[in-house]
Image (cartoon, rainbow, N blue to C red; front, side, top):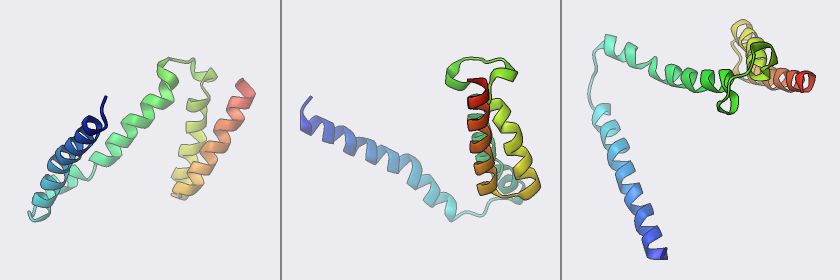
Length: 108
């Protein structure tokens, strides 16, 4: 593969990425959306994040684990509890990491 081909692919991907991402965002920023649509769209980031996290918690590495042998699933419980009680993303993250390490050590 030549260097010019690699750079051509990189530049082409950049142009396509700008066209498909920046242009719609710029166009939508000038529009006023109806409130129900704005409210509905506000849930999209949380739904996308939840779908990514749930698949990694339930099927780490692409395979199913028994619930009581899954440190990811067990660590998700105290993480959710800490976030629910404190509303602190940093606190929940630290609690989740600590819980995961503890469960991985205990189960491993």
